[in-house]
Length: 188
Image 1 (tube, rainbow, N blue to C red):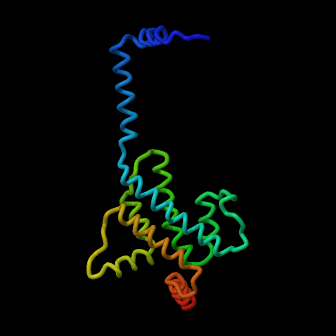
Image 2 (cartoon, rainbow, N blue to C red):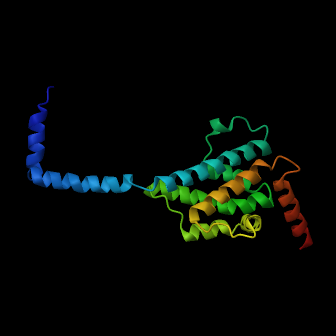
């Protein structure tokens, strides 16, 4: 079937109420499309990088905790499923999981509304992971660490990556945290 595209276009213009109406409608739709397209790509990239970074180390931990697990990529586990599997490993992973869940929520919001935003509430949730917040403050002294929401998110992701990546090493920072958690838990 041969379609006369000139006839199609003429009829669409007619059905739209004329060229001016069609141009007006198309401009309006293009403005809405551009609104979604013209997002803060720096913020979006930083959020996605933090999420992917943390997921990498969750996967690494999962494999380390379960050496006979097999090919984890073939299992096609979601981020949340992987987190659930490592969350109960120790008091340390349980504590980190609270902030990791918030990071996942931030990333999921990004996926649904295309807006790269880390709110003050998100920041406070990440800072409520006390081992992260306290270590971050101590390491920054005598200065104060950045209060920027995206910087806090990135610092949290790096903290999680460092702690999860060292869980397999008995002399690691993560193992020292675990030892202190266990010592304090046994005192109560």
